[in-house]
Amino acid sequence: MNFALFLFLATVVTGILWGIDKAWARKRRAPEAKEPLWVEWGASFFPIILIVFLLRSFLVEPFKIPSGSMIPTLLVGDFIAVNKFAYGIRLPVINKKIIEIGQPQRGDVVVFRYPPDPSLDYIKRIVGLPGDRVAYLDKRLIINGEPLPIERDGDYFDAERLFYTPRYREKLGEVEHAIIIEDDAPAYVPHVMQFPQREKCLYNTAGFVCEVPPGHYFVMGDNRDNSQDSRVWGFVPDENLVGKAFFVWFNFGDLKRIGSFR
Image (cartoon, rainbow, N blue to C red; front, side):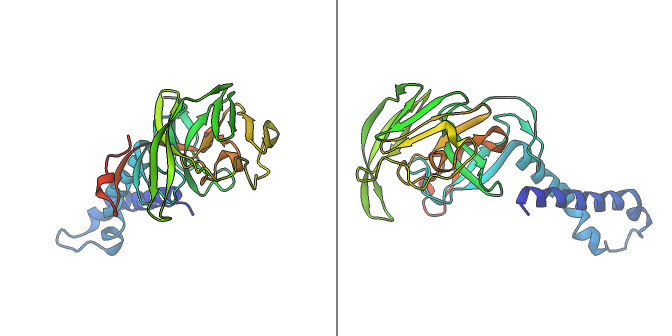
């Protein structure tokens, strides 16, 4: 059971208990009588659970970075805030969009339900919009035939693996962000899955070229040689989008990370 469904069921159950207590049971209890357990541990929690459910479903959801695929932008252990209404209001649990607000843009960092297993949440950067021709050849990102501007920006020190990796600044649409690329990693994409609309992609020793289908997005990690992303498992359908990441609000290992990503 996913957490959104659990929270929804908890809201419904405690709401029913709260309604029964308010409309019937409370009137039949003596003023000095102690509240029964079903009120103390059920109905009394309804307002809190309802507020959490509404905030998490429609406004902001917390998310913890589980892997290094978005290094150097986001680090393992970062707690980020995800804007749930940036791309429209969706019904909780079923994730059906009911109000259109905005559209994803190239460069957005998004949380989405992993297409091969929607019970898992992933986070990557959108590099391709519906209709785009996305290529990554010899480790250079090309959108609709135009190579993205890129410049060297020193080195990134990987404290876990204890070595330096070349860091670059890349401009994707209106967003300029950091990426890291390992010189000795291969340019081709290994272990490609047989994902839906796989025929829209061409792979070779230099990398790949993909045509992004309507209603889908192409996402990649900023840690270009250590990211399982659309290159491997395919396109992200619009209905899988959870929201736009916009803020690091905590990191137990490094308090300086707070506010480092906006």
